[in-house]
Length: 117
Image (cartoon, rainbow, N blue to C red; front, side, top):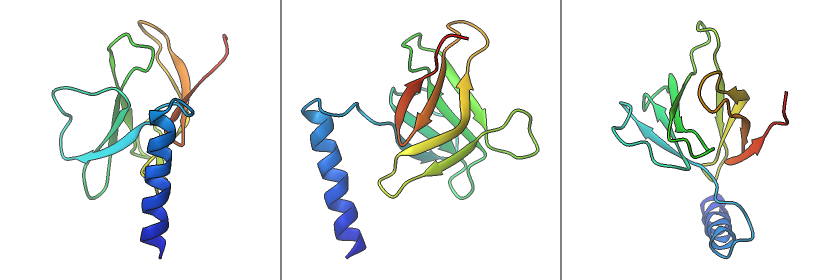
């Protein structure tokens, strides 16, 4: 039954995205290496069995690739949680200190911009 409910939720959310009622959500892609092309609205979890790195393209549109360490021993490091529909939540916030200086949260697959600091 759980698989059926997950399937319905997944396609319902895709339908809402298609008709513009909900922003397009980020999806997680598990891979062993960082891909040559990092697609928008994809979070790449590097290390299929136990992800140690998360990679996303900057949501501001500047085209930069953001690497986020998931290793507790690293500083800084982030935590990645994936809900049952495959949408990622990253904590704490992501803040580029160079270039565009984008500052945002990624919660349940949706970018939430932080206010000016």
